Image (cartoon, rainbow, N blue to C red):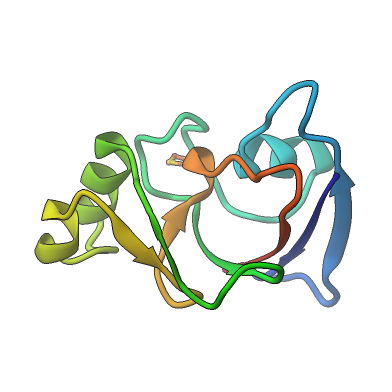
Length: 117
Ligand code: FES
């Protein structure tokens, strides 16, 4: 089970969810929609850039490399959420400070994740 905590916007307290990702992997946006959490999103399929979040992986090292899809990188570049240099890289370093699009993030079953915005 993935333990995912959401906190941002007009939330006064964090929302902690335990999500079974084994049967049907869900994106963070799908989880937010299902739970009615106040993360702003618009398209729901990764093209508008409205669902930008910071990810804090609680049970992984502070930074690690991830491969983002070209679609996610292109949308983030269009919204100036990553630099041109980062866009050109095959992998980027995942830290708490970088932006990700919730539509493109499918938490791992073992993740303990804080999602902020
Ligand atoms: S809601 Fe449009 S990219 Fe996530």
